[in-house]
Length: 119
Image 1 (cartoon, rainbow, N blue to C red):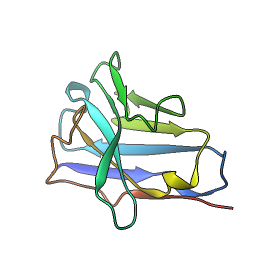
Image 2 (image 1 turned 180 degrees about the vertical axis):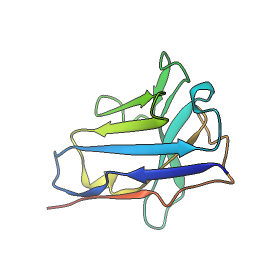
Image 3 (image 1 turned 45 degrees about the vertical axis):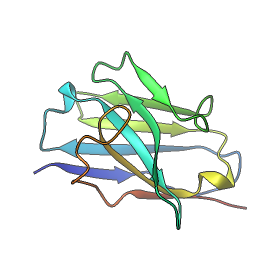
Image 4 (image 1 turned 120 degrees about the horizontal axis):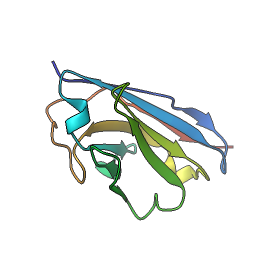
């Protein structure tokens, strides 16, 4: 059974940082590209960043460039999202999935982890 378990969210002030983690299971993690998505209240889910299976390729949404860094540990079946310089507009629930530009396993979603950026 494919499973994604996101963690690391919380309340942070503007300009602060968070590191999100996503533990994946039920498929060959080291052979799949991975990506992070986010969904703000009342809005659709959007791509944040993607990383290739070997970590050589990365892509970022325009809003994430220069502030967010995606990485992965294939030994731990885990993908990370380091978020720096957080803004109130970054407030959303963050999810991970397989895939580089779009979710390849979109019938499987975790509960996500909520990031709230506020004073």
